[in-house]
Image 1 (cartoon, rainbow, N blue to C red):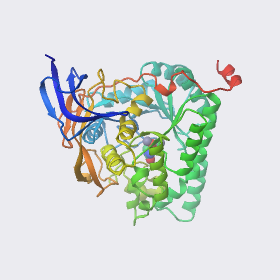
Image 2 (cartoon, protein in one colour):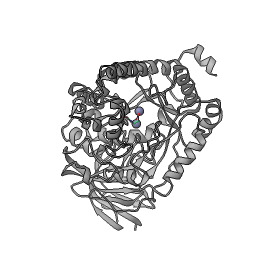
Image 3 (cartoon, rainbow, N blue to C red):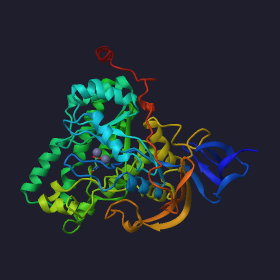
Image 4 (cartoon, helix red, strand yellow):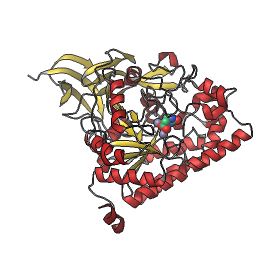
Amino acid sequence: MADFDLVIRGGKVATASETFEADIGVRGGKIVALGAGLDKGRSEIDARGKLVLPGGIDSHCHVAQLSSSGVMTADDFKTGSTSAACGGTTMIIPFAAQHRGMSLRKVVQEYHERADGQSLIDYAFHLIISDPTEQVMGQELPALIRDGYTSFKIYTTYDALKLSDRQVLDVLALARREGAMVMVHAENHDIIAWLSDRLVQAGRKQPSSHAVAHHPIAESEATNRVIALAELLDVPVLFVHVSAKEAIDRIREAQARGLKIYGETCPQYLFLTADMLDKPGDEGAKCMCSPPPRDKANQEFVWQGLRSGVFEVFSSDHAPYRYEGPNGKKAGFAAGGFKKVPNGIPGLEIRLPALFSAGVLNDVISLQQFVALTSTNHAKMYGLYPQKGTIAIGSDADICVWDPKIERTITQSELHDAMDYTPYEGMKITGWPVIVLSRGEVVSRDGQPVAKPGRGKFHPCEKPEPARPKGRWPFNVEVEAILG
Ligand code: URP
Ligand code: ZN
Ligand code: ZN
């Protein structure tokens, strides 16, 4: 007689590769059996008529993060992780953000202090590298990679964050040597600054100018440039929050040439449009993020990119800056127009339901693609697979029991983040998780938290699959000799 802590019975299990009917036996927080007619568990979940999916992994969210202008995100680990869990996410990977002059090791320690004992679900950290000094590149970063911080984000824009091409090459060379994954925020800084100055000079300070200044060509130029640098050094790169056709085309072309170039996109590029920044007064600031939402035609290109596999991951880029309050968007706008509005919008809780509803139920993407885009590919991209990101024997029981028929209307008062608005207010959704399990423990039920924050654990990352040095593409021999 098998000894299960829990059996999830009678559901339709979906992974990134198949859908099958099976019971799931859980013991000690792990999946230990999959099959029909499993013995009774000490507790049971009736999943008949439901989908049973790997819990979502959100590998791009900003939680308890201090921005380069000194603004703390509205969400800490308690609220951020709770919001994530209520929308079907069982692991988050936010950022430990270095600002110039800071020791990276100290930054990581500070972020751990913010997260310790706070999170409802498991978490890891990416690093943000804004100051690649000799100390950082020679000692701190290689040691941190070995300690489980195997991915880092770099920027080609923002005064306080952007790296020069030379610095990008340094970071890419290090990532190549150590087998780490580089995430790139690709926008041409000078194009944005030049356009912004002219818009301000012309008195066009309203939020809609943000979408004009962050032109798709600024995005595609920087994407193209970093692809060239990555090709030169033969290193995988993931472009985050890709928004528009031009950048998608550059990524697709690079992929077609066999380069290990990956793309991420986010809900704001499927469900928001630039004209939403054009609301009266400062209301448009509620849709301000970088890159900005584009137009309907670009939404279609983003959907195509999801369907055709240009995008490997679908993340929220949850960057929770409130509308009200001294550091809010409204006050920023009042102080100096669009240039002073904190960039970023929330999305942790709606990420899975919104993609399921608009993507799977409308047959734009398959259920397998949904699982891959929201969970499995994140685990592979960041060295968590197969412990996370799938339903298989030996994997953590991070599982969503998903009701594909529930209808909900998104409204801020029912979300669990610490925000005072959602840009998706009023959006109709079909499909929401009814039970979310983290390592076998129910953490949310019917979209409400039911476990105590603090149970979530830090989870160090292995070397990411794409960055492991097997099967490199044909490479520039002279450069290889220089890199050693
Ligand atoms: O506008 C955004 N996306 N803010 C968050 C920071 C970032 O660049 O991802
Ligand atoms: Zn970014
Ligand atoms: Zn972000």
